[in-house]
Length: 294
Image (cartoon, rainbow, N blue to C red):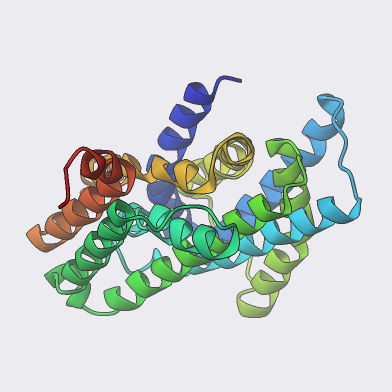
């Protein structure tokens, strides 16, 4: 698969995932939506592995990769599903827009990547400023929205650590193999969490929740993560994370268009700062290199 096609696929999936998370959680509860999504994803992976004549290796590096990816998926997904109950879907993608900046910091400390240059540090500063502006927005100060923002931020941090951990192990596994191994190995944790914290089956049929759950299980979990790990295998970790340069804007528009979400000026301003920070993370060093410093 070409890298541009994989890149576009991840952008589209990640732009619509926050809205699908809210729809599935609103219909059946966030733990049912999360566990059902992971169950569908694990079953699909189990079917695709023999169908595509792939293997699920179990050597030491493979096991470490499944744990690194799986713990990231479990922690990140649990946090974002819990937080999605309190914040608009578009804001979830905006907070996740900090992932490239967080990944750059972790990659510099853990992989020795040259990701803390002047331009990227400027991007980190703008991202932090944008996050502070979002916290001061009216929509965040109402009710428990601030807890939702913190939960989504924790999810982004866990996702960044997991991505760099997988890159550090460098097992050379395909994206579908990493996705399959991580989902199958973490499925008991998801089901156990549902049983301990909820344990109730849906009492009614909710078409929107059902379709959202199906979409997340097939695309959000299997295809999205497979494409993501495929990109992660062939590109630097911090550059893969730059996908989120586009997804916040698309997710905000999808939330307004399809879910009637109201995004106030503070959130737009904070989102603009975060996106500017991402752009700085990507291009500022090239521009600074052309400016003579004496």
